[in-house]
Image (cartoon, rainbow, N blue to C red):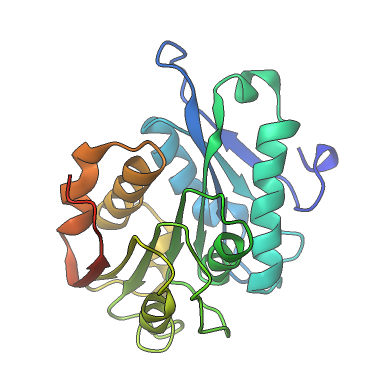
Length: 230
């Protein structure tokens, strides 16, 4: 794919096989600093199995900073909606798009949501960013940190990000019990459930997932500005 794209380094597209249920929301996922695309591959397969079209990206450089990763997430969404293979585009609802990222990719998800207000959902995972004020974000955003993360500690990253997002009507912060920084690069039932539930609620508008995003399991702390109980 890398020769066919612009603005990011390529990636892998995952999508549901079932074409009888209409179109699906689209999600772009970025790895973190020095992280290969394979570090977020588990999210590609997990999300596609739950009814999303997903592109996990290779960044232009392993060392790209959050702002660059945010631009690349948006470029990947543009590729999905405009230039991806026909079998992908025919499954995609271009009005329902979101971003996910790990570490500096999570910081990139914040950048993407801040710059493109039409995004319907964002989930930064163990996000790292030198910018602490995200009051301009309007996108429903779930920030997921880990209680034992020493690289992007929640006290200096996830929690200040959450507290700053005063412009987002729907925002939440979950601190996953026992999770370190690299718990997010492999299959994890708690993290997976958090990501899926948030995207199902805000990309698909599925109110059945509201209880899972207002009272999640496996977290030691949960904060939410969530006027969406049904």
